[in-house]
Image (cartoon, rainbow, N blue to C red):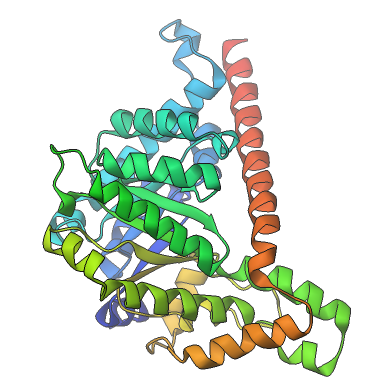
Length: 360
């Protein structure tokens, strides 16, 4: 077995994070699914390769639409292709794997009603049961997540940066299941909660570097994995609760934790630091292509160290130094939304220029 398959034997699903259209057109994505990739997440970079090959029907007068609407139609087309490629895996695993995630416009992150409307529109447009809609885990996003789950729409709660927000997302998921539309079976609803690992460390480590003490240096690169261990401990603990027992009896699926931003941003860390440290049952890890390829070829697979005492000690040691990862979560959320907005705007601009050239 390669490392992807070994991780799956422990119970973790590896998804490809981001999609270059070349992987899809060349047949390489299909090969990767055969080698152990069990899902795909798309983002605002995904559509860029499709835009580059765009030849608008506008030139023949077939379709006239706004740039954002055209962008969405292109994205829907790409996501459908991925969903169809993953459909056999989705059916084989009875909905556990074979999922593809897509994003809503980032300017809706603080608009619950707008998020619900956009997510519902994309769900209907793609029209594939193995679709997941990415919803930022803002306070307004929590409201939207509950309503979307209640209506039977699969949700990837994204941009999570604290153990507390993971717990709040889980609560929204459970409330949604408890309100589930009578026409939807609980077992047909899937959800993940995406904790962004390397972004946590990047922010905490900058503060540690400013302190510059030996104690601070010893804590570099440890906060994200500590948060992951604690979040996973809470996930396992909740799985044994009477509330989940009732939902599970009805056929509901656990909302798996998804480890996002698993590529190391700090060159002093090993390339696979965040991948190898968080392999655990009933979790998902999203890996960008270069990280996935490295892990597939030479990854070391062992189950997550669930020593929460050690994780708690890391957070206590950070607190002594005046650093609170939970307190930084709001800053990280804002920064990440700004980054998403910039990527989305850049893609719209690129498409707008392409339309102008094609129509001119």
